[in-house]
Length: 251
Ligand code: PXP
Image (cartoon, rainbow, N blue to C red):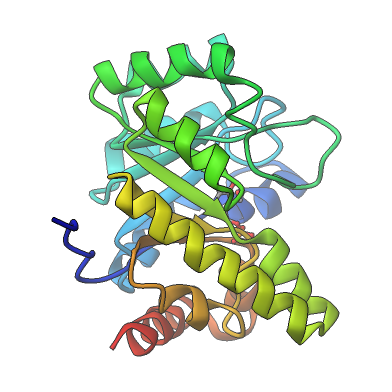
């Protein structure tokens, strides 16, 4: 018997780039925790934050405060390193999403290669799962990566939408359509394997609807565009508009 599809799509708002702006000057303004609070009031279902090894945006004290002050579930994105594992096990956030991380990259440029990195990553999935965190693996929409994620015991896969969004930026409609079909197939495969399906990276008002319309997807994590758009319309409206587009896509 096939598993029931998720009844709706949750929106996780990634507040990393509020911290990017704060860190450009030091000090405390703008405060990513205040942004998380406002995202919560504007219909976000969760808050996502990536504690990077170089602390270029979110810092350790931001994580302390997000855990203490925000009621929404926290999805902590992190690399599979001993330092990050220690931090995650200390806080036990609702979810941990393991992501690849290179110091020289501007953002998370591709999915985690869980097939090649199996022996390194599997103990992280096990320990975080045993601590009660919902473990997610940020991977490319690829059947082999999905099969390995399942075999490792991850609860969730987050499918990387970067290539699909990149094709939209290039104005290559045929490529965008091909990559959308790849996302649809991967979502179906992951759902059939019993994994919860999330997606994210690079999503905007122009690219979100076809992804949100994929029936197997349970959560979208969106950051950079929402924080950028908040400059023009305020964070509340930025999040509410995204929420509205997701709802429209799924109705
Ligand atoms: N999902 C994951 C796993 C990510 O690493 C990121 C970027 O930190 C996002 C979603 C959000 O991407 P963007 O900021 O481009 O919306």
